[in-house]
Image 1 (tube, rainbow, N blue to C red):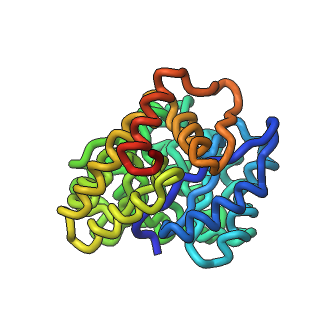
Image 2: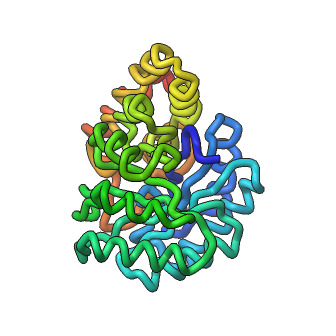
Length: 291
């Protein structure tokens, strides 16, 4: 179920409010473009600045719009275990297929704290969990040995790995077993991630180039790394440009250039600077998405 390209969905806004109509349109577009699943209300979905009510409605709308055609991995992370339990239970209630749970940010738990946090979430409902390990944002790194202990729990099924360390894939295969799902959380290295034993990407760039990102993934999963590399070469300038400033800001601007949604973001984020806009447009042209 969890293989290939999964867009880390943006949350579109219009005049400060969540634009649910555009969100539903994006779900249809992503499915038509070959995305193998959807991940609403992660960091790219601006989870830090959504209200709890908005967070839960976005999950509900995406599950309803997907209508079982592709799996939905609901963002359910928090640095407050009680709050994460609320998001987990809600995602299960509305029919999500799994939850994406980030390592708690800012309060810097120990490895024992990580085990306690994820065990509590595992036990709160029946929803499968994909760990999101992103030390650059959360300032805590779940070590492979810790992940291996959590992988023994039946509903902790995989990891979105955004460490950028491709050697982690092999280390985690040893710690967690070959059936533990490993999904890249970094667009620029997703091609190599699969060569090491990964099986997908939760992608920011896929918000604007879903077909190309999906084609990279399908090629790698078929063992055709030569084709995948040609496609990755087309995408690399766009990957890099999107992340010059916060990735969700870059990709929303790129989407606005294709008429997919507004480039509106919520404070404390602001729109792209003009030099970065130029880089994003250059990336879009290199990928063949605009003239």
